[in-house]
Amino acid sequence: MFDLEGYGPTIFGGAIVTIELAVLSLLMALVLGLLGALGKLSSNRLAKGVATFYTTLIRGVPDLVWMMLLYFGGQIAINQIFDFLYYEFGIDYYPQFNEFVSGVITIGLIFGAYMSETFRGAFMAVDRGQIEAGKAYGMSNWMVFRRIMFPQMMRHAIPGIANNWQVLLKTTALVSVIGLADMVRLATEAAKSTGEPFKFFLPVAVVYLAIAALSDFTFRQLNIKFSAGVVKG
Amino acid sequence: MDALIALLENNDIFTPRTLLQYWGGLVTTVQLVFLALLIGGVLAVPLALMRTSSKVWINGPVWLFTYVFRGTPLLIQLYMIYYGVTLIEGIQESIWWVIFEGAFYPALIAFVLNTAAYTTEIFRGAIVATPAGEIEAAKAYGMGWWKRTRRIVLPSAFRRAIPAYSNEVIFMLHASAIASVVTIIDLLGAARNIYAQFYAPFPAFIFVGCIYLVLTFGILGIFKKIEKHMLAHLQPR
Figure (cartoon, rainbow over the protein chains, first blue to last red):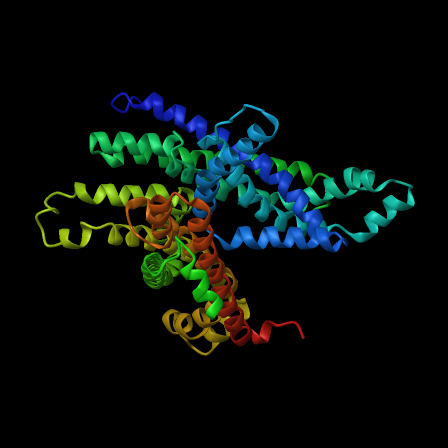
């Protein structure tokens, strides 16, 4: 049943690629999102300007445009940089810019912008008195962030992160367009050569739904964990 | 203006010919997005009402529809319809083939179904949020289900749905870029052609990115105006 005329195992391998891509992009998005949120909330005008410019620009342009710009432009930019290094310093090293890396960078950049908004809202939801109390205890800024802000902020951020993750997961399908052999591309190739689109696209759709359902469950558990200190009532 | 003309004259890529290609792409993108939102929005109203029904046999199928279309990538939906439509028996001999031979209508169908699913859930949320007192008042006036839905529930639900719906419009505009994957020359399709002609990814894609950016902020501006007008009673004083 899962053989799919011999394409089954290959497409399953593509599902692993999709998951790897999604998880790595999520990690990058979370880091960029935290930085973006801190920038937006910063009193430093430069940091605030850069963060606002980043989130506005990213969210105003379609994901696929970013993906093509970074993939087709990325290789040229990298070649030019390493051309320069070669002619100036004699460093003979030309890295290949592959679809997977550019997919992770693009999706990470895009969802970093969305995560910035999520984290910004979550940081603002933490009571200011908490920070003042931390400072009154003589904690440094970093310690206040690590021990007080972050754990409380996460409770407010989890629903937003969960939402962004569900959208991110579906966005990974776009990387098949620039040629990454994820499950969508493999299914497309199988569908074209056998002339039976539903046979291959339906299982792929079911895998997406299954990952979505599984992550929904995971985020519910995380929500419980981060809400441990909240009195319900 | 003179500076602009000078810039165009000294430019290999942005000649009147390529700008015309971008213009053609813009027209296609706007057509696709506008039609998808119009048809999807009209479909979403009855679907949202069905979705709020307490009867499982009415509510259930709509729930399944929105769950599947919101839970899977639009690209897969597009591929299924684009490649799947050729499988319908006899379609290539029928008069419908004129319509479905190109990619425009399959793409439009995929976009309509996708936006209908999202819009249904947006409307459902707005309908459920109707204050119970308003419905009680309508009932006390002796209004039946249809009359109170038409006169009380839907008008206020549409207003409440505006902020979430503006997000959906932006989402649809951005999602429409994947039409270029199935050979449609929309905005991104034009950019891809121009990239291929000149092997110049930066000018081709940055220019199209700017057009999308302008469209996005244009739509946001229009919705802000609408919100100010329609949701005046909810503005903080």
